[in-house]
Image (cartoon, rainbow, N blue to C red; front, side, top):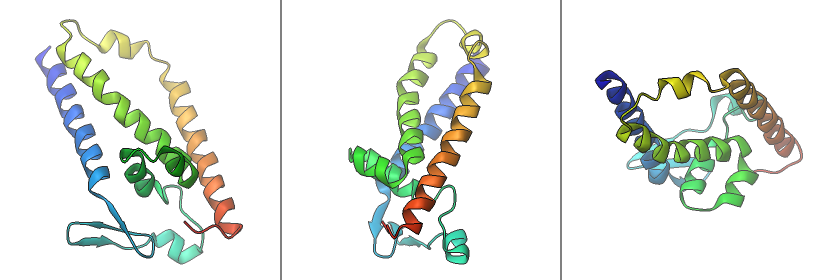
Length: 141
């Protein structure tokens, strides 16, 4: 039981860290992000091919979502907005799992993981197609 609580606590810490990082990203010019003194360079895949990679604009989408700019985040990177929502919704779920007396493993074992992962993969590919179409049509966020 304690090992389960430690895993849940570590997951909760990771999720809160992701949310904190999302808040700390500050957009600057030329599609870069500033975190403290560090400026992230543009995507290497995009610089090489001229097209966005599967995760292009996801960081900015997270940064927009954490600031409540939901429609902008969806327009920019739909999968980023969805993943942020899953991360944010996991906070109360992890807190509940942490305070439960019973194990959460039976609940997790009955979850339709294959369908969930297939949904995420297809969503990521559809979102990637969307960002490529937007780039090809001259939309540059």
